[in-house]
Image 1 (cartoon, rainbow, N blue to C red):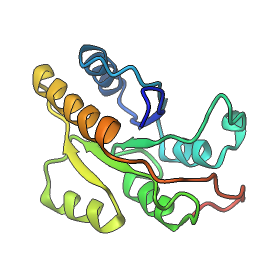
Image 2 (image 1 turned 60 degrees about the horizontal axis):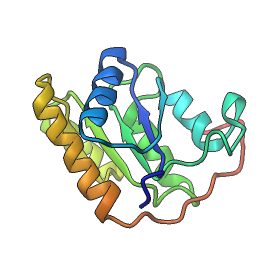
Image 3 (image 1 turned 90 degrees about the vertical axis):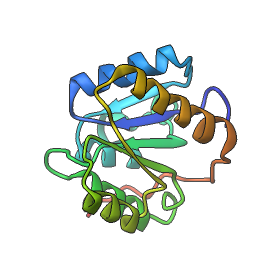
Image 4 (image 1 turned 180 degrees about the horizontal axis):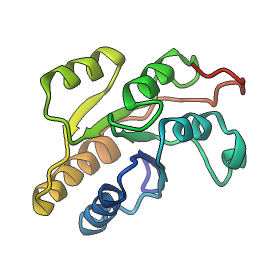
Length: 156
């Protein structure tokens, strides 16, 4: 994966978005980061509808960092939707959540998560998590081919 591989962060908490940005900066993660704040927005981004219709401005990500606890369509629903889309089902999705519940981890893996990481409030520990993301998901792991799904009114 190149340094320019896009990451999509699906996160509704502004403090967590700022934490990810600060940790990426400290870890020298130079990849572009797009942020959407709801599950609905994530689906619109992936399909390329509404404000996300310009594919050169909003290309498909090579890695999604997905929070589970989102308003409306939650992270598990987003993940299940991705895994049902022929062109996207191989997309790499790392659940990045504050939940430490084993049940949430089990559900995320059953829904098709590639990894389950717990956000920590300790900044240095979070920097270590971003170093792990960078080292494995951005430098080592090969990204599959994905294509935008057909635009439809019903995404569920």
